[in-house]
Image (cartoon, rainbow, N blue to C red):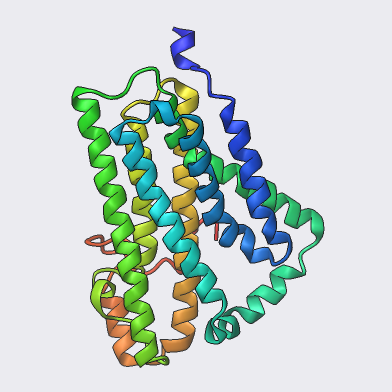
Length: 276
């Protein structure tokens, strides 16, 4: 019974943590890179590691689980790099970057280590499905395929939302984006990212063995959702400052939910979010 509750975790998880530390150390050059470039390419490196190490144990489900996540990480990674080179974006975040770059080195080290641990926890469902003693069958297999469908839906939503906003801003740089998916929710790119990680967790839920696997993967997902809610809150605050005087923006924010569709939550600005 105890063996089932506390199923061992592959020592490969240490390798994943060391990879995350190595990749995200780029944040010592610019602090925000701990959670932007370091984030997405840590995930890319971990995918490569587990697929290489467990290549003989790959199934269609685990292959797709990691393939979708790989496309997501590469797409977002190159999007972030491209954005870093845009003058308008740099001007927009210059004050914030200047402030956080002045953080003491021990604070930066704490961000480096804690964010690397978070990336491993978020990615752990992939490790757990690859190292499971048996792959899902029956209802569990249906759950796994549902998870992959959620991943794909999230990937497409984030991709399309980023492209729609980029195209809109090229034509109307001083306006708020309210086209395409932005008519469904005000932050569809953040919603898409949440869906990618929910999908990954659901695939793992079809095969988790023991309380440690459930706890680690769930903590990673919950923290990711909290982070995205915090990001939504900061974005909303910035948009309110830029567009709050516009009657059409006020009407838009009263009509379109801020993050989750069909749920009448139109603002997170006054909501307590632990990670914001």
